[in-house]
Amino acid sequence: LKDGSGTRLVYRINGHLAFWMTLLVVEVGWPRWEDDGLGTWRLQFGRAPLTMLYTYYSELALATTALCCGLSAYLYLRSFKKGLLLAEGGNSGNHFYDFFIGRELNPRWGTFDLKEFCELRPGLIGWALLNMAMMAKQHEKLGYVSGSMILVNIFQFLYVWDALYQERAILTTMDITTDGFGFMLVFGDLAWVPFTYSLQARYLVDHDPNLGMLGLAVIVATNCLGYAIFRGANGQKDAFRRNPDAPELAHLTYLQTKRGTRLLTSGWWGLARKINYTGDWIMGLSWCMVCGFKSIVPYYYAIYFAILLVHRSIRDDHMCSAKYGADWEQYKRLVPYRFIPGII
Image (cartoon, rainbow, N blue to C red; front, side, top):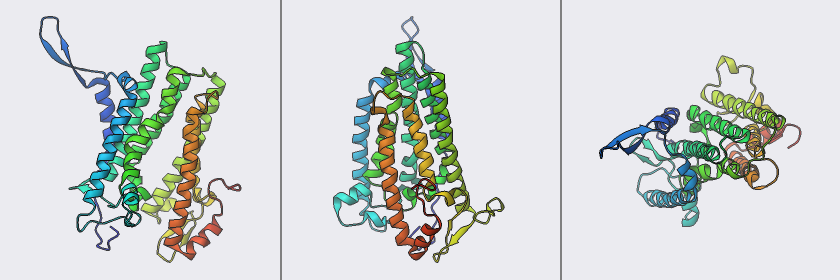
């Protein structure tokens, strides 16, 4: 913890297990009562009626938003309890800003960490389920599932699986280490991610572009490129943070800062300071491309995500400048590009 106590928080890293257990329940463990024809009702288990998520999409989004408002209000009020560790950015004294950003750094119920739980599990698993619901609805309407729908489900399913499989990696991210848990993260994690990131699958239910094999192959290649950059960069960063002296990382160069930490200046992170953001955006672009080019609506994600990543990189740069001082300026001279080597 940043209070100088030397305390280390313990987290329950079981998001990957929760993901597969949820899919198991959805596939074979959904309970329902059935009449056996003799006047007796029996409890049966089978596949969940996923198309209901399509039918009640708007209502679910509204209910989730209301839940986010309630949870955010609870978190804000409880943050005034004495003895809690507050986030630096969420303790400004401005009630609206602090409510939005979040005051308490690590809100917990006993050992249950609310922020770490909400960061991945409900939103990402919900996103995957909504995509599956859209695929089921397209099959119900058309009698088949299109190539575009299959690809967007595979791409985003793998993205969700990867995040949950690599769950421990989020423990070193700004969301966990620096940001408070307020409306920004609560709404983003629980409502924004599942109900806006599933837009492409929802669009394809009624507006499938019927792309040919060549077009689908180009999209697959684009997604693979983005994933290779994203996973390669994040995996290297996480491994270096956990054990910078590991033999497999001996070839990497770094800048030793006055704070005692090390900043990578080679490998993926020698190419650009936010090379992982570049890979993430390329993957997101491939998700939009499966919808064709007749409407800008499914490209909302690529546009929004570009703005988000640029803003986040500026915010990161400001925080790192305050944290590392002159060392950060030297680091930027060693790694001058932010997103794309040789360009920007």
